[in-house]
Image (cartoon, rainbow, N blue to C red):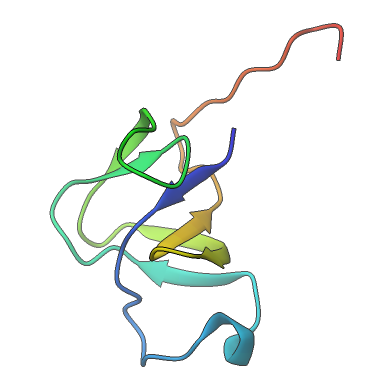
Length: 81
């Protein structure tokens, strides 16, 4: 399960292509959910707070950024795989 999230980059506005992936960004809002997919219909995997740092791996259409799973966020896979 990929965790995606909308948030503002705390540094100067620069596209991911210009800065390179992955990069660190800071959450600038009070209480934002990291989700299991790119949109509000996907279930939350954890709640981030102002000042939390995340690692951004990709920018997707619609303003969603793929981030590394935050501490305390879990994904599941069947043992056979």
